[in-house]
Length: 204
Image (cartoon, rainbow, N blue to C red; front, side, top):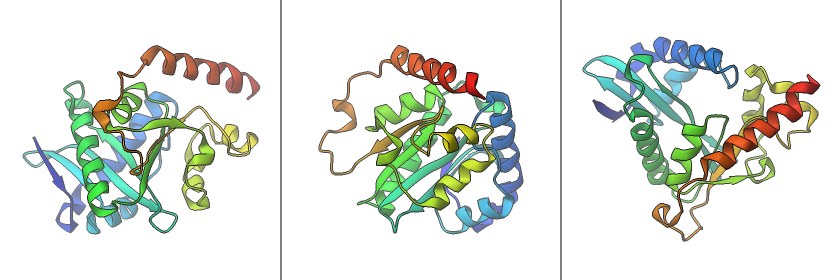
């Protein structure tokens, strides 16, 4: 498996990347599903994406989004092709995109929102911590991206304070190293997700 910083020569993978992201979101029932090939190609061309290839076969992907005049960056669109799941590839991709983010934007806070326990665990091991949405970027363009999620109405009716997703943030000014963090309490995150679902979904 080869994990590389993508470029314009990888435009041919844009379509399958979009399809894989959309299908994954459909199966989960949550998540930001829609990304156009043109949008993905932009990330490939500016060196803000990690691509996992098995020979010339698409295996996985993640990209960087920049917000608030480089005060915040998000590692978005993490996806592994179904054929390559269950072997730790998502963690490898996440590590690479995190390293690329730190290299290109060393002063930026890195954040993400997710409903996936596996992604929360990976983030936690990298040094992220759970935070309220108010600690994330207030750039309206970022939150506009949530419009394609089936749970966007929850975000709207809570005035963008919370949703089924959990916000997680890495602050470069935090002196703790990733290894200083204790193992994530998976049961606590599972219970948090369950509480959110019972609180919000019954009101839909």
